[in-house]
Image 1: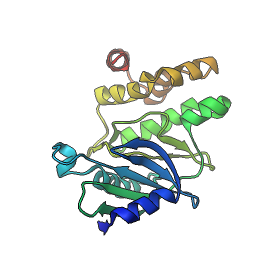
Image 2 (image 1 turned 90 degrees about the vertical axis):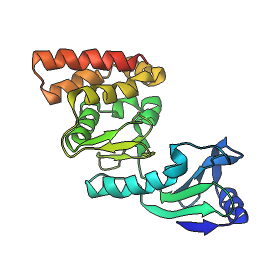
Image 3 (image 1 turned 180 degrees about the horizontal axis):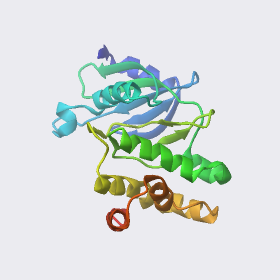
Image 4 (image 1 turned 90 degrees about the horizontal axis):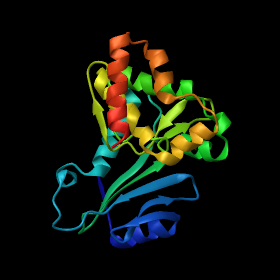
Length: 219
């Protein structure tokens, strides 16, 4: 992790378009060269798990681990801490393409739900639980495959993810009403049904899956 000054951070923020604010700093800065800087600003004296294991380090480590498992993720260019503060940053190359959420807004017919569910199923089969998964952090790449962004919260297993965890994970994107409404308005297939068509569980497993999914999708 490099160390930069407060002035260098301010210059970095000026050299781009700030998106959202937190702790007096932008959370995300989009730069003209298609790179992105994420900024994590933790208040002094505030102790949490992020104090011992900073989000920036989780991001960098997950980028490496996910890439080793064959997933497309952004290339990390810089990981730094602002001198004399708890502020940490990561700069990375943006992925080409559009998020599934943006496609639902602008071109819903380009969203292939069975293909998307096959991608999520592949994550689960590889023992990857992307716990903050939603349709804004899955990117449809120009070649028709998918990539991940904003992956600070990932759990890894040495075997495929369990049925209950899969159901709870698939429920997470369904907790965003606007996304669900857009899928329904476009007449797109159901995500749970598409996932189950690929998983091919027996009747008891299917009932268990839907029970857990319905439980978590309402939270």
